[in-house]
Amino acid sequence: MYLVQMLLPLTSSESTASTEEMLTGLHRTLVERFGGLTAYSRAPAKGKWLAHGKEERDDIVIIEVMADELDREWWKHLRKKLEANLHQEEIVIRSQFIERL
Image (tube, rainbow, N blue to C red; front, side, top):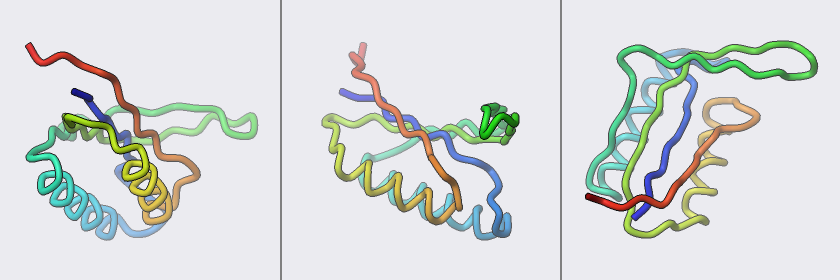
């Protein structure tokens, strides 16, 4: 079994309303495909990184699902779609093998 986590910005260069609509649609897609999700959104995580020698910051939400199998092509397609919709250079989607106890 795999735990897949998405680190998504809470805002984009577009309106916050369109970001919220996109996240609502993403939640629906993930629940339909994987049967549920966990979203860590109460207190946004803080992202920091260097871009062209300058420190960038972002508030993010972490969304995770558990999947029996890892369909890398499906996740790659989703990542590219999220990057385009959220106007991001890169969205992090990561996975790790887990054992359900």
